[in-house]
Image 1 (tube, rainbow, N blue to C red):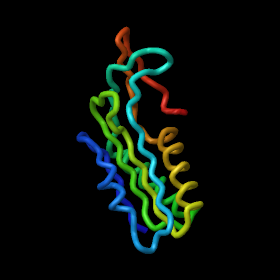
Image 2: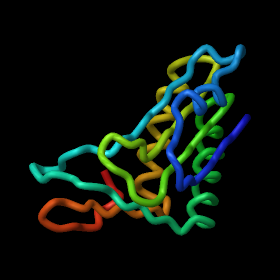
Image 3: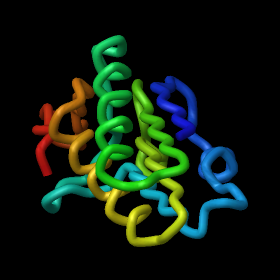
Length: 139
């Protein structure tokens, strides 16, 4: 299985990520692209600030990819996450998975983003026009 696990401080690119997981032997590719919303709970979001314990975050992301491969017959797993200051509309995270069949790709992609948010040490601060707050990683 091919894995590409990265934490970036520059913009993420959907086309590049898709090109890294799509292959002739994969009949199903699923991708989740998480972007910064311009509002949360009725409050205007000016920006998000992401911080990570990078060494541990990368290690945990590798463990997640291995766990997903143990649950589904995957061909490739890609997890790219941004850190730093992101404005509304910018991409914060891309999860891409390919497999022989779509069911495995869909299930693995959902598992990876949900588990990443729950377990990987990446923190998000929302900055609003009227204040700021650290957001729980749990959905």
